[in-house]
Length: 302
Image 1 (cartoon, rainbow, N blue to C red):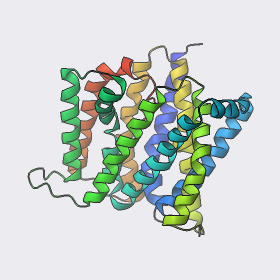
Image 2 (cartoon, rainbow, N blue to C red; image 1 turned 90 degrees about the horizontal axis):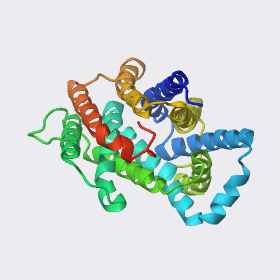
Image 3 (cartoon, rainbow, N blue to C red; image 1 turned 120 degrees about the vertical axis):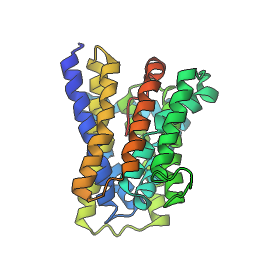
């Protein structure tokens, strides 16, 4: 049954979760390495997702989906959570959280570009306006407003944040070919990704997970960034009478996140970050006029 009030409540719940994760990422990375954070968060989220499937009586679908398309779900898992979060956490580890988070918001603009070769979509004039405005906003953030000097505080960190948008957009393009239950598909992706995340932790970090603060942060990320937020967003889309109105709620998240970073992490918010974020959000609003009906699957945002 459609119920716009319920849709708003679930949508706001998801946005509230996403608003806190940049702070959770940054605080957790003070105690865990990116690989360690990803390992604990993924395992936590997987337990939650398996529990939700058990309650819904859908656990039996995991084997069926895997038998039908093993390579497809393995690739999904390698993209998300394995590569995407490993690279994103590395970006957060190197950059101020406000920069990493806001640069990551350009993923929907990256999606527009990737949709041309992979989905056969065409780019209209308004899409080009959104692309130029969005990436110009990203440059303002990355250079702290010094566009002419092109001086990057941490070029590798900026590159990692932008590469994460490429992986996330690629994941959603691949996900448009998923005709099954989205919760089952996500659970299967996390299940198949876990061995690779364990290997990454062994190669690039260690299993000395002794800091309780890191555990608290990683479990929080697993529950609220990778788990509950996704489920609430699916419920919001399910109950929505007007999905465009619900989708617009995601633009609250980055501004709320900046406030949390200021007061909980203690980051001084750069004026360039605010200017760049406004430019990126404006670009996404312009873009949404075109992308709303074209990309129904990419229902998550950061």
